[in-house]
Length: 347
Image (cartoon, rainbow, N blue to C red; front, side, top):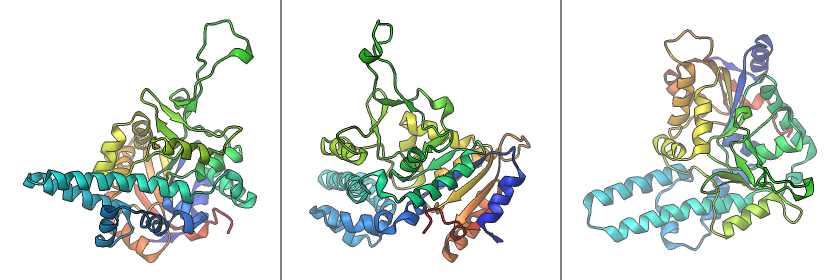
């Protein structure tokens, strides 16, 4: 396949002014900002310092720093133990280790994450915002599989045009005669603005918590930065909505059991026009994302209201080889472009 540049992607956007161009972000988006914080190595090194004998044994024996692979091993081993049926204590230890690993991952992201938005230099923030605006101005959506706050912070800090994550407030004493000062507003809850939503966190994100009846979004206040408030919730035993299952099927099962995640995934399944990926590897545990893309492509139909093409950003020769191997899985026109030809964070 011909390796294109981001200039080629821009040319396509400029030639097709009436077409929506959507953006799919993966961990490479965050790693491009700072690999010392957002790489698997950084997370692994943090988790490896936790004093949990079972977890440390697992990390030592399963020689990978990809946590999706580790979780897949644990899930498979747990099923094997269940089939033999004679080791309930072992199955319980495996389940506890898996849950401990998931919580440790969230703790790692929380501890390693920049404390607040203004730790991101202004020039980097603005450069990233300009990149995101390319897609929002085409009436496209932004879909992210990342858990961190970088995307949220950039959108909020730069007043990026017409972005909406679907959250809003409800007036709780509606119908009562109350002055503006006496009005009582709810937490930021998802659903009020979902008709206008164009930013979707496919695997959840640090500020989103399951409130039982609704999904709520944590926010900063006059006392604490956002990360501090998220940390306080986690210290109280609450954990963000966070898809950490192993393979694509397990991830999709998790997604379907949460109203917010299911809506985001269904939105990806129904995009039209073109999709551009940046920092997303389309690895062996991303089958559910490829399935969503193919649903949007509506193979065998000539309807204009479908996904026509995808532009996959690649960083290395191994990335190119990976896309070459799976290119037949995509049911729309496929392009690959060199992700190094766009300086998203103004290095």
